[in-house]
Amino acid sequence: MPEHYFSSAPDSDLRLRRIAVHLVGQMYEVTTANAVFSPDHIDTGTQVLLNSTPAPPPGGNFLDLGCGWGPISLHLALASPHARVWAVDVNERALDLVRRNAAELGLSNITASLPADVPDDVRFRTLWSNPPIRVGKSELHNLMHTWLPRLEVESDAWLVVQRNLGSDSLHRWLDGELPDDFSVSRTTTSKGFRVLRVRRHGPAGETTD
Image 1 (tube, rainbow, N blue to C red):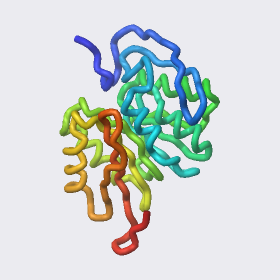
Image 2: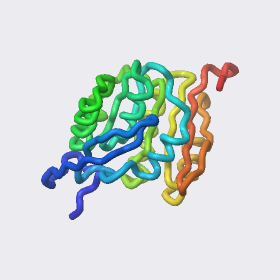
Image 3: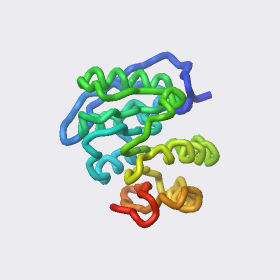
Image 4: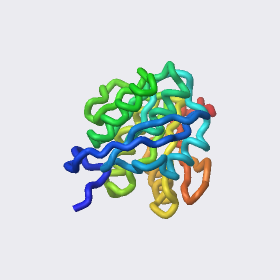
């Protein structure tokens, strides 16, 4: 059977490859491998997210949920060197690649971690994700329930989802499921993808943008 990029420990022999990527206005060489998501290039959805999302805050804890080999984490770490970027994935091979790429680019502000290894008391100044839609709706909803409530007050999550794979239904589900201090809006439509902004506001009557 073919391995899925969301397998926890791929069984196939590791085959590393080098690719050139454009991050934060510069070209970099990074390492990817088989049995991870989009090993040949930055996938279209992630590229839409990187191109259309405002610059991240200057510091704080950031979350890249479903990090793969690390394009979002590397972008965030380069853009905000004083932040701590938590690169979270269930795929051990992907996490090893994030660590390798962070070390090669001299980025000491990335922590590649299994979900269970992120301390419970960590709250996030921003969350960026190209979520693993193909894990199924139940698991996707569980991810949203688990991580979005860990946003700090007056902070944003940015999610990119392919329109044909349920971006609008996820938008409606988030609208109905999240507490009243959250709002959900669509900020970008490009190349068949939508970017959703999930905003955690302050106390009732004190919301800000």
